[in-house]
Image (tube, rainbow, N blue to C red):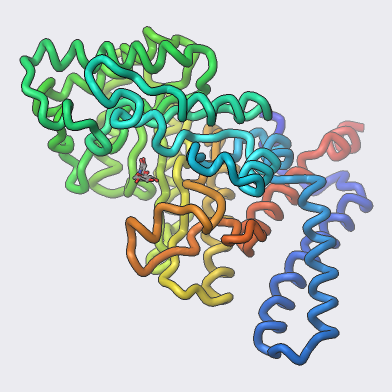
Length: 395
Ligand code: XIL
């Protein structure tokens, strides 16, 4: 892939180098000065003006070259989950469509919402997300076909024979995937099927169909849309551990049996209390990509115990940067997707009481240090990978 050509340092145009230095400097200054202004208190009006000037300049630069443009120059997709309930918020849609190249449906394609009773499907909320994506040239990740959570009561309390369970799941997958055939880039076909000890999770699907439900789901999804990339997705598999070993063995076996699976999603819901070790994540990703699979970071957020301090926001930025770098350095890591982008709407405060501030924009859609860390990582690499460099090196 062109964008992942390693940087040799030869032929970097001085003008590009100085742009890079200038922008990196601005970012550092903006962060440092934000800290200073906070520490110095209200009376430092003149300093505040300088900081505002720097921030505005920086904002103008990032608007000319938003994340999605820079991600594209690096050969990857950058994305976020989207909830249809926020599509009336103009700032939400404006930021979403400016910055990201791929969206994941947050809840709208989960069984409970899309197939609430045996004979009814509700596609309207998912349709609304997908039409925004299509209108802005964004790809879509479909989430998720087979999961143990967010199931309707007719499934949770269902009393069917094994063959009936199979035909329910088959019909569900053929209908949902079939409806969006050709429009969904990648599907999280099976979500969280392995538990923390490395055994198959005790779910409605395992109980009623048996372990073959996983293989069947992939085959049915492929039948419904042969062009879609099909993923196994899970949390807590970022580094080598009992769970990721089990997922590795599972997908390896699927591949050996010719099951159509194309990738593994690393959710990457992490906490600043215990951030992932980038070297270990890279080692783990490598064994999956060595199987010929793609990897997507599918649901990244970095939760912080509230209230978050500036120091914590800067450490959070470092965690985002490190994982993006791991992805950029892994040949088959093709998407970096976060579980939302604004702290205004995030699942973290509900799922992890006392935690929040996990995303890259604050509640007012102002970029946080984590945004600048992603931006600067993509920007500096885009410049190093730019055709100008290749042309000069080639002569
Ligand atoms: C979460 C949503 O963000 C919430 O709105 C919902 O209430 C619960 O599910 N792993 C997943 C996602 O695969 O589907 C989950 O999404 C977050 C954890």
